Length: 247
Image (cartoon, rainbow, N blue to C red; front, side, top):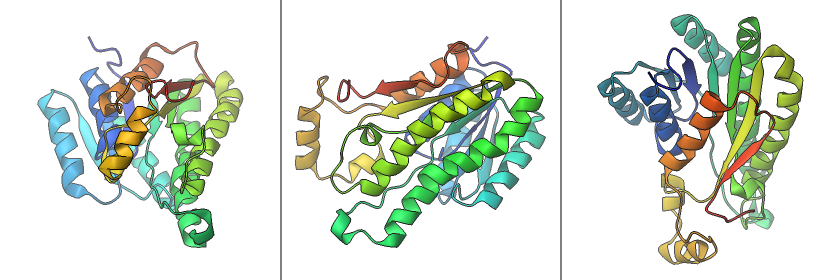
């Protein structure tokens, strides 16, 4: 029997990278999983097929996490399909990197809208459902760059630092409803986002990581699984999965 057998989960930004790994890990451990994505239909379908090959259940839902109406419609539809919703993983995120003197209002707003506002929209939408069932596990995905300075990422760092602060307050407010809220802060991880970094820069970054390599999406997923499966007495906390890059 899987560690989250009988549970249902919604994972945002689950068509690739860390979100994909989380969706597959939860499904492998018995959860029915709703895969949210915003653009890549083919990638999302691949994740759903992989889950089905594992003998799991997956549904697809296309929605822009930065759009509150789309988010609330998605949560309502997923809860109706599954009849309950136990786990929310707020993973969806974007970057629009540039130095502050060149950063436009649009670049700032786009990142905050998806990464931070989207986290609020999803959490807000699941609260009534989880409160009614007196049970919920919410995990927000932040970043090491929400904890330390990152050149060219004022918008991204602000959004991910905001996610950490939001998590703590949400945990405090929701604890009496049977809902835990925690955050996982990955370091540099082998994803498409990091893959766009020039090789020479990647080498420099790896040199600053005590373990000496980038993380793997599956390693982030293991931390999420721990929180939702075994973290009944853990709330308002952050787990740093970064190879020692931030201690």
